[in-house]
Length: 110
Image (tube, rainbow, N blue to C red):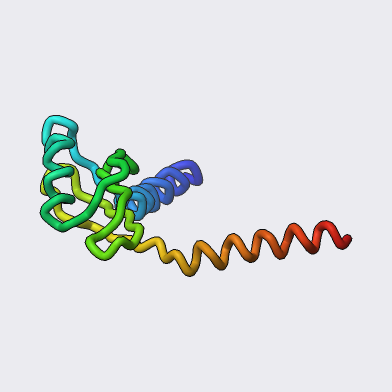
């Protein structure tokens, strides 16, 4: 009886875990748009592309937007819908470099 309850408990929790992990793109490769279509999407939006890669089953464009800001764009591989755009703020990058140099100075003083 205990084993049956344990198995039922596992089966009840397992689908929830799968649903939580389903935030990435999951599309069979046969349904993917070609890489040049992703490059055309970027061109249409005025983005300059440094690299197009595959991450978690989605296309990911690294480059710059029309205003010159660094961007990372997640694109659905079948529909070419933009899922997410992350802006790489140069101010944040400069602040991170400064924080690292401050930490190095603290290490030298210890």
